[in-house]
Amino acid sequence: MGEIEGCTQMFLNDNDPQWNDISCYALLGGVICKRNCSADCPNEDNSTTTTSSTTTAVGLTTQTTEETTTEVQYDEATTEDIETSTPNSCGNNSNICGADGWKWKCFKNGKCYSYHRYSVKGSYWKALAKCRKHHASVCSIETEEENEYVCKHYCGCKGKDVWIDMHRMVTEYGTNIVCLDGEDKKCYYETDSNSRNPWANGCPADASNMDDGKYGKKNCCVISKGKWKDVGCTRPISKVLCKKECVKPR
Image 1 (tube, one colour):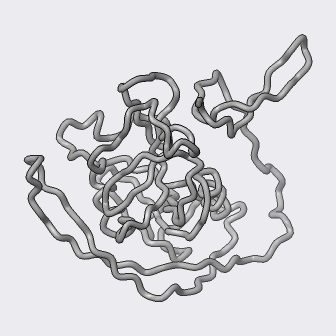
Image 2 (cartoon, helix red, strand yellow):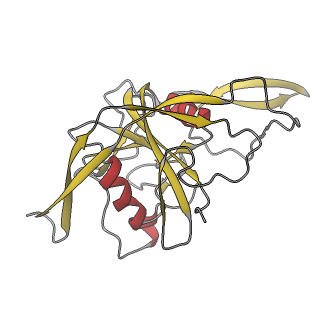
């Protein structure tokens, strides 16, 4: 069984534009982008109601017997969901950290991001649509510092998987894993030799491995109990962590 063809490409056949379904992780030569350039916001409510969850985590440090590194595990305690009002961000080019009720943090590299975990029962593509609805993207983890923050607050504890935006492209096969973040840059641990391995035991799998035979190859990624796991992109996962860049409040 090959890749699930869940995306679409356009090409010319004798000057006749045609569509073709293709794997979402095939390497193509370009992309057509689109954005709303009208002066006014579309007719919609000035605010949208979203559900947020306040999560605390307690770190427990244990020594593993198979590795010499220190593994950090987290226990999760979640309060009741609360309703928050999120302003419509149409035309707003500067998202102030915390203005929409999302948790946020500024990192050593000078970048600030805000985060929110949502319930979403579905594939990676459904998770991506959920984040885009809130003018965000699925969380891509760029540094070990950010990974520790995400693990502390959104670790996917008690076996509950959470979509994150680490993946691999269909550029190399066999046992050579090509891990990329949401900006198609190599995952941070591959470029920083001092970083701890973020993967769970046995992950990532061989690039040719299928996810239970029906969810395609393991090209997408979730975080579970503070560790990354590679899964098929069409596997139904119940949570997604969304992320967007923000400006530190003055």
